[in-house]
Image (cartoon, rainbow, N blue to C red; front, side, top):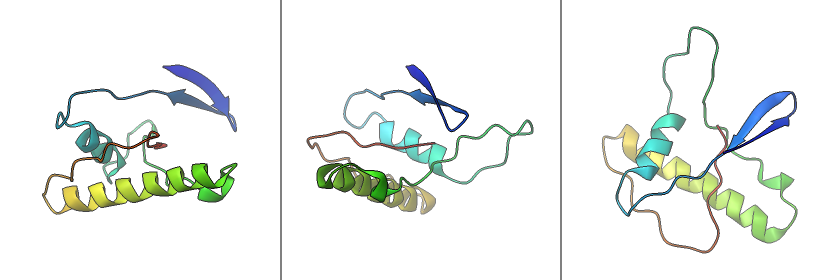
Length: 97
């Protein structure tokens, strides 16, 4: 895990690894869904990434795909269904909470 500061806030970068169908997408999606606020004001809400901040077209596509993947998974979980398996692809999805 790597900690940076960005706009006066702490930013932690982490990777989630696991076997196929082990619940990685469900865990990340559950974090993105609405829930009760923490009494001390801590947050962990998913923030759709601004695609326009990307440096090039490939990065823009990756950020757009990341947003789309999270939205599809969130819709599935909110309907009581398991999200579709994440397709194996080149590049990693990026989510910000």
